Length: 126
Image (tube, rainbow, N blue to C red; front, side, top):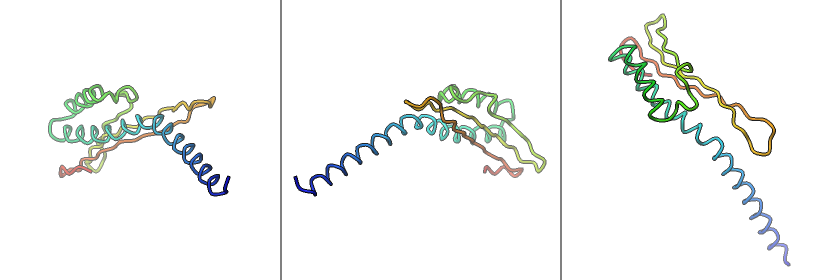
């Protein structure tokens, strides 16, 4: 066989290996990243509820959204905090850690996530 044919086959094999690794990584990490993005939106909505309707309503909304969007499987109410800081800002912050089990490895890989929304005294959301 010609050298060009072997080079193409080797490149195709390498592409398949890299592609397979990418698919496996996406399957392992993807659900957690999706939940993190969903939690970013939830935290913003909860911060606005705190601004508009008070702390109790915001806490209830957080519990509801965690359950409704099934984020609560990785994130509990205890992972989130409502904090009113000295400068008058209201901060809603959720931090959580998950251990991703990788097939063929004897250990998991920890991944940390954080979602935060801040409402300034003038009502602006950051």
